[in-house]
Image 1 (cartoon, rainbow, N blue to C red):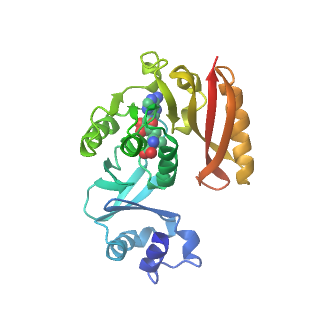
Image 2: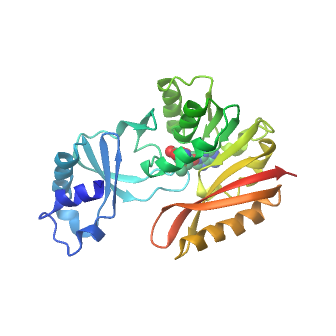
Length: 280
Ligand SMILES: C[S@@+](CC[C@H](N)C(=O)[O-])C[C@H]1O[C@@H](n2cnc3c(N)ncnc32)[C@H](O)[C@@H]1O
């Protein structure tokens, strides 16, 4: 719906045969719109931004200039219109999150997935979120289920915002923010938890052994990967066969369900696998 609102906003301003194809995407994060636009729109990009402000009622518009980079997963941005502020408050599933889109990874496109995972968690569980960002999954899980969540991120900006978000959502003592490379705290959290979240595709295979080590017995690991494939079902099968091999070195995988979370480019999918495992 927002994509169509943006298309309406730019109608008559840009010369494109197929506007819908040209507009590569729009994310609304609190009061900020982030858009991906083609090179042909370069000359009118600030006017496009202004139109979007009046059409969508946001305060700022930024253009994505580079995809999320390795490591902290922060994307490249250029200001287009409105307030020159990259900080905002984003609301999701009854929780509020301070976000700075220039300093931390954030995607509203994982909203359904965050809700799904929170729905799976039991009230007495202890959870480790190995790649927590500003604490989105962790806070929603703790708020909805009362579970205790160790919430790790190696980006100091994400950690600082996560600390604020825990207080904002009144979850002090329930969500425990940790500033570290997730691997560095594996020993400290060894055999503490019922469920592990690994929402960072690039480290999924490398850190799967660390995830298993933190389980106190049979437990769940939600692992995210990126798979190139033309067909969704094939992407899921590819993810399964690779992860079963990697995880199999550390645990018995009792069950493995998978699904595509979202498309992340042409013939490229983000896949989540819910692994029920028994550590060796
Ligand atoms: C894809 S984002 C997580 C998004 C978050 N789950 C959400 O829903 O908003 C991945 C996060 O992992 C963090 N990260 C990258 N390498 C890490 C590591 N070795 N240990 C801990 N965190 C790491 C990044 O700083 C980034 O915030």
